[in-house]
Image (tube, rainbow over all chains, first blue to last red; front, side):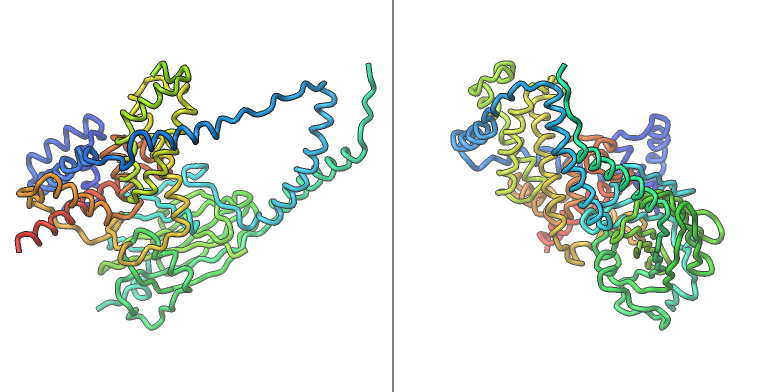
Length: 170
Length: 154
Length: 185
């Protein structure tokens, strides 16, 4: 049976995402391995079925009605803002300083109040993951609950949990 | 050239902001991280055959069920609360074969290293705020799963 | 296009008429809800007008617009995820290190089906995927994005994209084959 990594590689071959050398290797394997060839055929069939799927979908409103809503929304969003009054730079600086101080103090208060609940950086922003000897590891992030899952694709024989504690099925 | 009077109130305001930021930064650096790690067994069975396994808290169970994993039931195998000093590290054994090391990189940023049978299996850097969970997992025999769940508890 | 970029509303209206079905269809595939797809399409067109100067013609205008609607859909899906409760049955998915393997589907699920009926079946099957899996499938199969681009758009790793895409395709094949088997009974 093909392992997970091999199956994903087969998909990448179908999607032309493999480097040339690996693609040639995969083509060779497909010629020799009926299991891989069958899986590729299934993936290809699904890909073919989906092609043109959206062509039959029509927007259910008339041209004029749909456009009238867009036009109205564009007009609403394009209301002209009043032109700024020209002010000398010292006066501008002074005018900036008063609200800036107030904002900074408010920001500090907000920071103190919300620090415990601040969301973490999203995956990919400052996070480095090295799953040693496991290129099949993948990461999933659930935004709503703030849960990050890192799944290692080792087969069960490499399980880390204590046999006696975690797995006692007989 | 017109002389513009400088406001003492504004000067004091900004001095206060600056002092707060400095002290805040110092507080962050000095903070010890309080963490909790659980070793969990995942299964499709409603009950665990191991009497030593404990039920999982409902909120953790719910979060694990929200993940794209096929197991619907989770049981706690082991749990450890531990502290990591600022810019320091802490290592906890979870089972005979599994250890977790956590290093504080400042603020909410952590480096997490999972050891399996003494070998480094995974190293991950990420921020972990209170209320968030890092779940490391893999396959266990008989179509079950092991999971290591790390949370900040303070 | 140039007329629209000069601010001529009538020219933009013509662009809307030409591409509205495609933009709406993409929103439908992403959101699985006609009303939401309609609202997001409309919003996409307004944004399209506001950003028209940024369109350089590196991709077709239709593609440019579908990218706008996709980003709006993704934002909406992220907001909805905070409130969405997935049942345990809905989360019964094979992904990553899951042991169970889906058998390869060899039956052709399309034989003997009228085009409209096939479309309906594919539509039903797409509805049975989770949002995460369907999103990756739509971005790859309909938007023709590469893995790297999908990963950046969705905010996950390339490995996750590959896993989800693989699962979505296999699940779709299994669902369509199941429907075919029901027909044959």
